[in-house]
Amino acid sequence: MEKGLKWSCVAVVVAFLAMVHVSVSVPFIMLHGITAECSDDTNANFTQFLINLSGSPGYCVEIGNGVLTSMFTPLAHQAEIACEKVKQMKELSQGYNIVARSQGNMVARGLIEFCHGGPPVYNYISLAGPHSGVSFIPLCGLKSGPYCKQFDEIIKGNLYSDLVQDHLAPSGYFKIPTDMTKYLESSKYLPRLNNEIPNQRNSTYKKRFASLHNLVLVKFQDDQVIVPNDSTWFGFYPDGDFENVLPAQQTKLYTEDWIGLKTLDVAGKVKFVSVPVDTSK
Ligand SMILES: *[C@@H]1O[C@H](CO)[C@@H](O)[C@H](O)[C@H]1NC(C)=O
Ligand SMILES: *[C@@H]1O[C@H](CO)[C@@H](O)[C@H](O)[C@H]1NC(C)=O
Ligand SMILES: *[C@@H]1O[C@H](CO)[C@@H](O)[C@H](O)[C@H]1NC(C)=O
Ligand SMILES: *[C@@H]1O[C@H](CO)[C@@H](O)[C@H](O)[C@H]1NC(C)=O
Image (cartoon, rainbow, N blue to C red; front, top):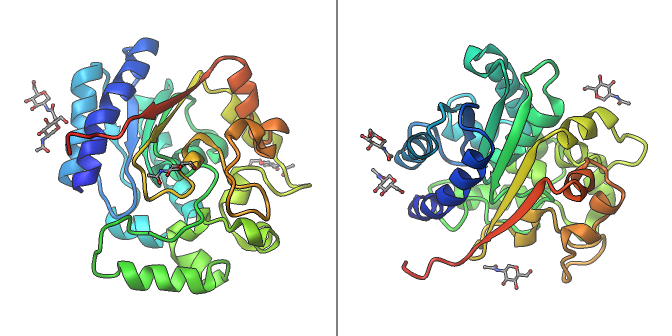
């Protein structure tokens, strides 16, 4: 929570600038991270702070019941719930912006790419999103909540099993670069979200993602939860390699433009923002 709050403080400035720059009247939604909920102090305050600063109407959109849903509902289903919610929000019918934090970015991208018949998303501000996956298992971040350790152990042991994929949300964006075959076969979320599976690439997902007006990717330099931290900018390890991280522009996702990231970047619509370590801590 403390870390979340500190992040908010820094991130808010960036998010605000990006958003106001584009439009003051477009509403935004906020999607929180794992083990959090819209009504907790951090997220309620963060949403309100963004509303205050941007002058735009904003809504923290809750998926299911918050904390437990964020941990145990598979992301594909979380994205469906979010899709139904935004379709029902009259305030968003003319289109909206998204601000998402950590795991909330997996839901955000599901909304953008998969939500058939939903209102258009104009600008998307991603705060520490694990876009290319994570390869390390500090699921509950560096917090040590009651079930964190068990949670981590279960995921580690059977990452790509149906049992884990169907019941633990973060398994949907775990990607072990030395086990790509299993990942592509059995991971139920990220391969589809990133259009990674050869012969199953869906041009609709790409078209939708590429239609964003602006994509702001914020990376926190002291992020120890997302490994590799370049994943927040769509960088990742090359297949079979656990050591050298490729910057986004050298990944196949980018060079072959699987989801339109290159299209957006070439059009000058992607901002890669790095927020420095907060030394005041
Ligand atoms: C809300 O956020 C603002 C700005 O980050 C901060 O100054 C304030 O202390 C926060 N309040 C609570 C209750 O967390
Ligand atoms: C937002 O603005 C209202 C009214 O000015 C103020 O009472 C509230 O403390 C502000 N909240 C945050 C989180 O900045
Ligand atoms: C791509 O996804 C859309 C929307 O989910 C679906 O209607 C379409 O059949 C898919 N196309 C392919 C080629 O899989
Ligand atoms: C972030 O990634 C860079 C390069 O991969 C690495 O050198 C650095 O230690 C990472 N930072 C943290 C806090 O893990």
